[in-house]
Amino acid sequence: MTQKADLDAARIALLALRAGISYNIPLQRHDVRFNSSSELLTPDAAIQRLAELPKPVLCEAQVRNGTLEISTSLLVPRTADFDWHSRRGRLSAWDRTLIVILSPKSWLSPKTWNRIYCSGRDEAVTVPATVLDRWRRDYLVKSVNLIADFVANPLSRASPEYVAAKKSEAAWLIVFSSPADSEERFSAEIHLD
Image (cartoon, rainbow, N blue to C red; front, side, top):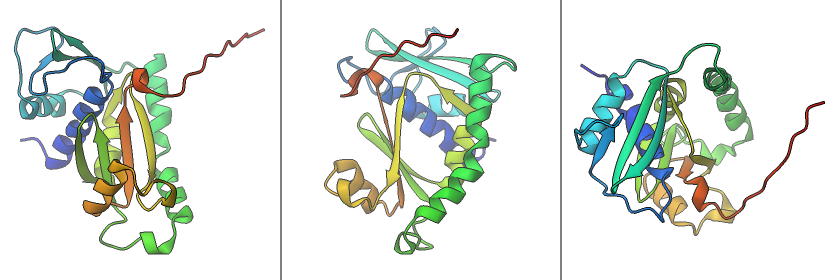
């Protein structure tokens, strides 16, 4: 039987995969297909399938005929994706330490400091920090933006995501979105001599 933390990490992965799809692309919310299979899964069945995959796993999403199609593959050592994923995962303990150091004490109530509100494409879930760590350890989701912030950020208090995060009694907020929906874009050329 799959543990709740594994299912919650898979739920974040599915949320991030959906959020990586532009709002300009119609998406039928309840249909999910894996690796070009003809089988359509409910969101709960898709979460179960993600949770049961060997880890760490690379996940990519696209929409075909209005249905979210998820491609998955095991991250292979000594590849660029594996190296990126393993470097990203090593930051977790440092990230937590830095967040605690930078957080005003009033934000660190025992009830909320460990709760993270994850939002994306018209859905959200609130999870403990340990679940987010598991998601970071187990999943590499391609083509999705991620913004993290304190829920109590005074510059963003009117934002719908921040209001919802406060209602869920979370201290932290992560918003997943599609790169295609980003307001800011830039390009750069890198020349290696």
